[in-house]
Amino acid sequence: MKYFGIFITIFLFAGPISGQDIFEQWTPPQNNAHLQFLASDELKGRDTGEPGNDIAARYIAIQFEAFGLKPVPGLDSYLQPVPLARVSPQDHSVEWNGTKFEQGQSFLALSEDEFVGNFESVFLNHGAEEADYEGVDVEGKLVITLMGDGDNKSPQAAFGMRKEKAALAQAKGAMGIVEIFALQMPWTMLSNYMGRGRLDIDQEDENADPFFYGIINLEKEEIGKLVAGDLGKMNFNYPGMLKEKSSSNNVLGYIEGTDPGLKADFVLLSAHFDHVGTGTFGNDPDTIFNGARDNGIGVVAVLSAAQTLVKNPPKRSVLFAAWTGEEKGLLGSRYFVENPPIELKKIRFNLNSDGAGYDDTTLVSVMGLTRVGAEKEIDEACRKFGLKSLADPAPEQGLFDRSDNVNFAKMGIPAPTFSPGFAEFSKEISKYYHRPGDHYENLNLNYLDKFWKAFIQAAYNIANMSQNPQWLTGDKYEAAAQELYGKN
Ligand SMILES: [Zn+2]
View (tube, rainbow, N blue to C red):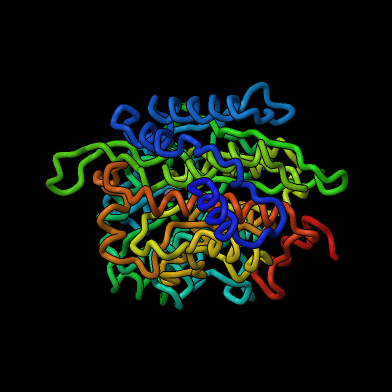
């Protein structure tokens, strides 16, 4: 009777059978062990370029091998080396109309190459659009602009624009661009931040013409005078940034799909494994930023997906990636996109996992949920484990464009980010986000078990879709998709 009872119970609660149940033979992966290791103090916050980061990469590579993933052709292991350089500004000053502007105090040079000469300067308002250049000859001159575009005053927006503005000025024949500091933050905050130097991909771009980019801090009256009058010449004797070579690794592995036609295409499952290392936060005696949430949880999503899908391969091939350097400016994923070991047009979808933490264990928050043509597949996966999917919480944070997925989106690949549940950037989130308290010990493992399964199921659903997912019509990345995949 006892056995019979159990049999009935299992039979009744097994639920409807829709396709293969990939969790039927689910031997619990060692998810909690992976997370404990990655977030351990010994890894010292997995800072890019530091030993703790290399150990984490090695650990993930060993797991990929143990699960039976294949290394990507062309790479001799599961590691994709990412050449990096630590670039830091050197002391110098710029002379303009008889005034000296010292690096750090009232001037910040942000370009890497040496820049020397005496240049005519032209004021172009924000210099953010073609109209600003109408009727002005900037050939061989230096362009002076106000930061941002006048509409959005946030530092992120202004910094997000600087590459485009520089490219526009360069296309018009200018030698450089100097932006007038006009952000709602103190100058010292910016100059301290920039003065520390940064990690960047170490890649000589031989075709690039030397082009200067700097920011100048002026008093309001000075700006008025400049705008009204003759700007005169700006005299540069900039030695360029100091460069120290460094390196790190992305971790890559794949499984082949089961469908003879669709297996040529890939679904990419990714998460960054680096974090922000060590430092101090307020009076907290703890100096290790363990990064259990950011992004230990995401790495374990990729690891457990690899372990599960290698035994239950879907129709499309699946590429698994753990990126380095996300916290330094999405470096590892950018390097992959610029040096792809697999043709980018074969990657039809990127399900990325990253997050600051969670404050709602009934949810999965998905940046881009309604934009990438797989809402149903993701939502069904979440509901299977009693979770709801929520599209793009905290829109003011611009989260879609702040993780590695954006490097793929820019190339046209539909690329949402699958994050632990939150509906807004609440106190509970900021308590752990980039703080030393982001520990394994204060995680809700019961919730994470469901989160990870939902991630795996979503990946499986997407990798089995009969048609490749497409951006929603009119999305800002739709044109890039047409360029990558061709018009449908
Ligand atoms: Zn992150």
